[in-house]
Image (tube, rainbow, N blue to C red; front, side):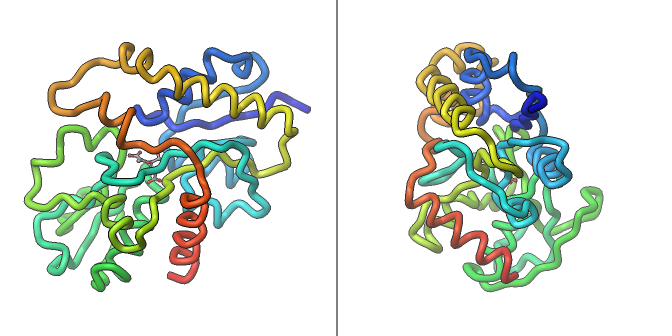
Length: 241
Ligand SMILES: C=C(O[C@@H]1C=C(C(=O)O)C=C[C@H]1O)C(=O)O
């Protein structure tokens, strides 16, 4: 087999995973790239990568996908990096600008607007267009929470809607991967999570965002049964519109 191609996410929330990979033998055996989530999804769909930290909404476009690790980017409470920022209360929102780097959270916003808040605003993709609200994910949200009249944390809203946690991205492949490699990947990811203090020490501190709280408490990295249940439910909502 040629070198396995891995696409991981370039945001801070993935740094513990990257730390684990870098402290394993995986980089020698693979081609590893760090991409924004939408690009990670595109690579898996187009078979330009074999394994990725795939935004879950993209799984619907990867026939025969397999989840290859027991870890994810998830949340069991407010995640603090996925927002619908709005100039108006959600009941009055008519237009929403999607985040071009996201695949999951744009869909999560659509699901929540329709089924939780029961409104159906128009989604636009042109960031220059004046929309009432916009989806924003990842590091670009850090420190922005108090800059808008309304900031809806989409993980928190999903949890109050369903009573389930949420999963943004999972380690998935678009083809069968040897079990041995999955085991090695799991071990590397676990190592990274166990060394989050070291990862935090490498990050540029910020006074407008609590990086320790983010990596230790906000992002929930274990892909357990309830998160798998949440994933199935979310994919059903997305598939059915
Ligand atoms: C919690 C986050 O999860 C991310 C959100 C994603 C999306 O919306 O498509 C994809 C991957 C995750 O890294 C975040 O980046 O803030």
